[in-house]
Image (cartoon, rainbow, N blue to C red; front, side):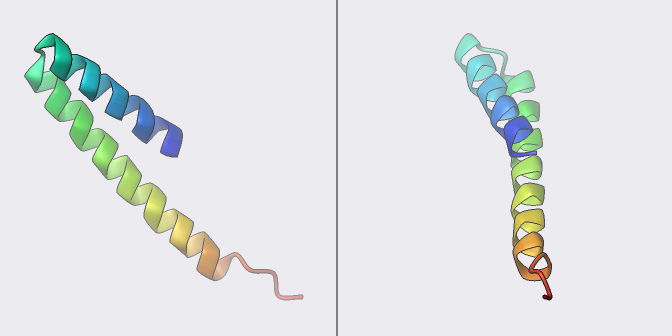
Length: 53
């Protein structure tokens, strides 16, 4: 999931550089949402993913 966030971030940067501001905004929002989901899942796996034995 972090990979997809980075991919959308790169797409947003390239689109913004080339002048496609609508596409850049959408890609940046997708990257932000995916990154937040990644962070939440990472923290949850740290808390609940510990072995019990």
